[in-house]
Image (cartoon, rainbow, N blue to C red; front, side):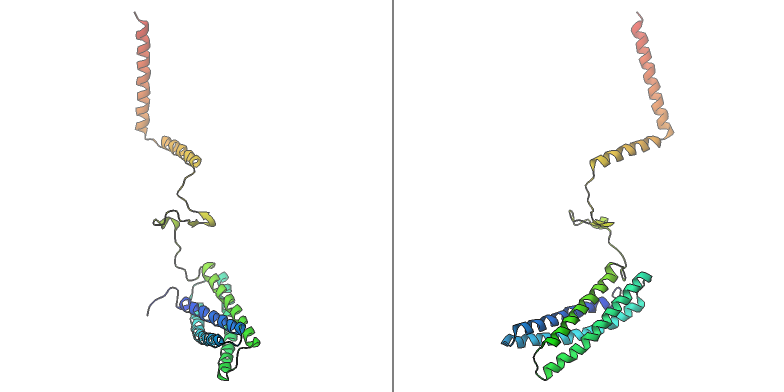
Length: 224
C-alpha cells in the first residue's frame, strides 16, 4: 500500500471540502435564479456534488479517526485535535440529514425552498470551521510534519524572500557595512591574540633589527 505521510486523511479532506462547498453554492444559485430553465441544470450539479461529497465525507471521517488515534501529539495539540473532531462530528450530523432531504426533494420533484437552503448554509459554516481547525493542527501545532525547510537551502530562487525565525523578517544576502567593519576589527583582534609564538618572536627580531639600523645610521651621521 502506498505510504502517505502522515496518513490518507489529508488526501480525502480536500475532495470533501471542494464538493460540498460547490453543492451549497449551486443550491444557492438555483434558489436565487428562480424558476428558469437553467435552474434545473444547477440543481443537477448541486445534487451530484452533494452526494459524491457525502461519500468522500464518510471516508474522510474514517481516515480522520485513524489519524486521531495514530498521530504523535502532546497535551496542547490533543485539545486541538478534540476540537477538530467535534466540529467534524457536528458537520456530519448536519450533512447526512441534508443529503437525505435533497434526495427526497428530487424524488418527489420538489423545488428548493428556504428551510433547506438555510440548513445548507449551516452545513457550509460547519464545513469551513472544521477545515480551519484541521489546518490549525498542521500549520500551528505541526502534527504530521516530518521536517521544516531551511531558508539557506534554497539556492535556485535569488531575490525570493525567506522567513527566518519570526514571520515578516526576510532572509537577505546583503550585509550591513557598519556591522561588517566591526566584525572585521574583532576578527583581526582575535587573530592577533591567537598568533603563534614564533610569529611574535619574528616580529620582535624585526623590530630589534630596525632599531639597530636606526642607531648605526645615527652614529655614522655624527662621525666625521
